[in-house]
Amino acid sequence: MKPTDPRQVILRPVVTEKSLRTSERTNAYTFEVHPKANKVQIRTAVESIFKVDVVDVRTAVRSGKPRRLGFRFSRTPDRKRAIVVVKQGQSLDVY
Figure 1 (cartoon, helix red, strand yellow):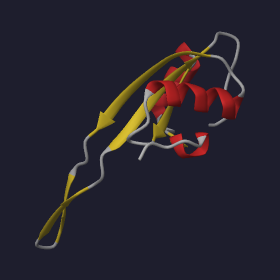
Figure 2: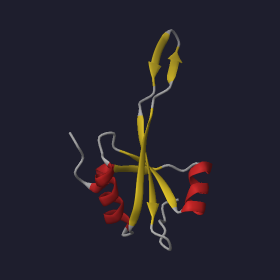
Figure 3: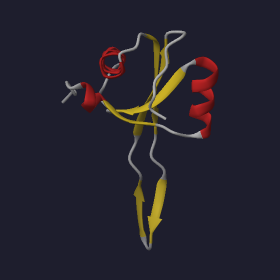
């Protein structure tokens, strides 16, 4: 089932040193998004939530890492990230 509400598409911002550096240099912001969301849904969700113009959207799926709990092996869940480039002169106040 694909998400329909913009708040279901954008799950949370990714706040790391690398994402903060890219937001300062290239005006690109990183979000964790719904695994079944496509680029068009991500673009409209960011534009409607933050009232900005989106120039580009890049997505990447990060595979979960193996973890061990005693004798059991499990994996952390896969996560989908979106790097959203905002029009020059605009910014997001998410960090």
